[in-house]
Image (cartoon, rainbow, N blue to C red; front, side):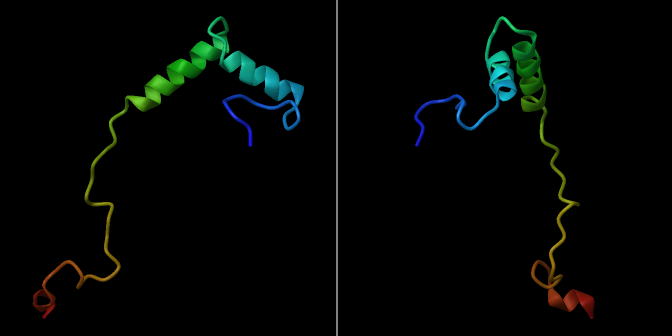
Length: 68
């Protein structure tokens, strides 16, 4: 098993190695674009909505006598 972070030249092409290096180099535009995208998506609050969940069996979470 590989230790540490990074990519191996045995399993990746030169283009993939270059892209990885660009995204992890603070002197590159790709690094800052990646950082901005991560911060944009990380800071979005997740919407809370109970209406999206519907139980498969209506009798599980209600009074069965309500459906008479």
